[in-house]
Length: 180
Image (cartoon, rainbow, N blue to C red; front, top):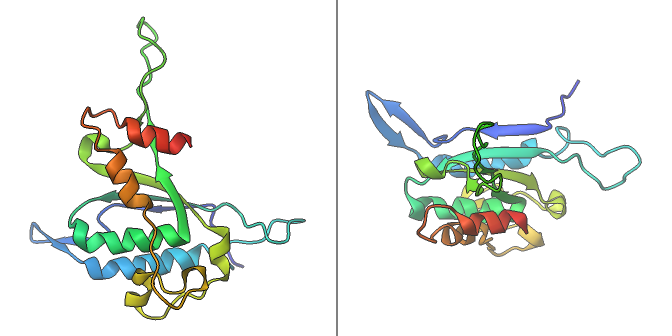
C-alpha cells in the first residue's frame, strides 16, 4: 500500500551538518533535495481526486531556509520555482485579551527575526508532465521545465528577497506578495 503525502516538511540546514562543533556546508545536496521533492510530489505519492481527471491532491511542502551562501543557493531556488509555486509563511502577534491594542497587527514573514525563511510550496500542475533531468546540473539549470531542452529559471525567490528590503523590519513587501 502506498501512503499519500498531504504535507511535506523540510527542515532548515538540510545541506549542512555539524562535525566537532564546526558547521560543514554541502551545497551539492541541493539538487538531490529538489529531485526528491519532485519525486515525492508525484504519483504514487499523490493521486488524482475522484471525478477530476487531471486534478492532483494539493500536497503542501513547508520548507525552512536560512541563507548561508546566496551565490551557491540561488540556482536551487531558481529551479525550485519552476517546479513549485511558493510563498512565504506569514504570522502576526496575537493581541493580549486585556490589551486595548488595535487588532490589525502587522503581518510579518515567519522567521524574519532570525533571518530565516519559511515557505509554503505547491507543485505546479503543469510540471507533472515534464521530464526530470538525470543530471543534477541540468536539473538546477532548469532543463526540462516547460518541455525545454535549454535552461530556464524562476525569479520568485529573488523577488521575495528584494521585497523584504524595505528597511523598517515589518516585511510589508512580503505581506503584499502573499496577499496577491
